[in-house]
Image (cartoon, rainbow, N blue to C red; front, side, top):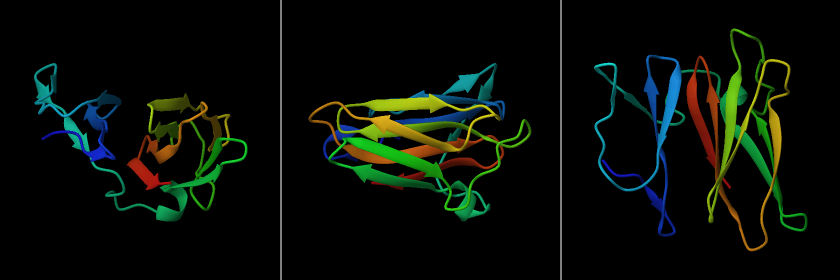
Length: 136
């Protein structure tokens, strides 16, 4: 199954290996991915039965500053060793930007865009509850 396209741009698909590692595949080719003889599971955003208010990214685009501020959840997501947002990814018309988070970080990020670029969507990965996204 190919990656979905937005405005003619190909979008990444994400796969989970051994319930611990996320693999990003970019492009429109069909892939059957395996790791150590085990097929990787494709992650579908916003499909895990978990508190949406703590997982769905809330993104605000400030066109004047050309910045996107992201808070993970309308209620702040926990950030502990056992339960955290591992990373936040901004997809733009020109590419992607990713910030890795640690338990000592707040579940929020500000991205600065290059001139002429524009945000498309934001994804966040929770180590317990999977992949979450919102369109901008």
